[in-house]
Length: 98
Image (cartoon, rainbow, N blue to C red; front, side, top):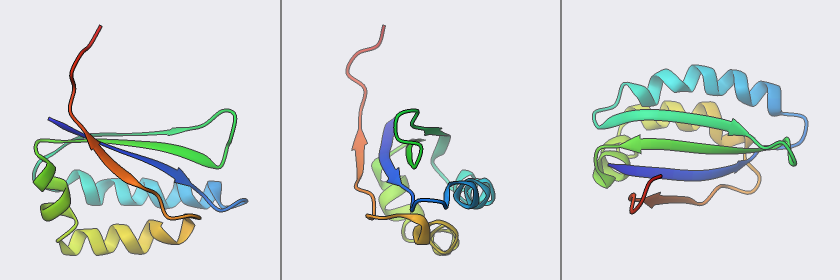
């Protein structure tokens, strides 16, 4: 399992519109092969910052499968306009759990 991590800085005043767009975009990503789960959380200290965590079966399911698909273009059209700056996306594998 691979965990995708992205901190999303949403343009001030666009938080509600972002959340509505994200609700629509959720179905786009969840239909992709290798998708396992998704979690979007809003920061309490910085309300315009969101934490996106997506679980994939493999790194390639995200980097090649999703990003190389027409569905990614739908995701991009719905969400990318909200970010400033554009987020850094990183991938993690679990090494410990309590």
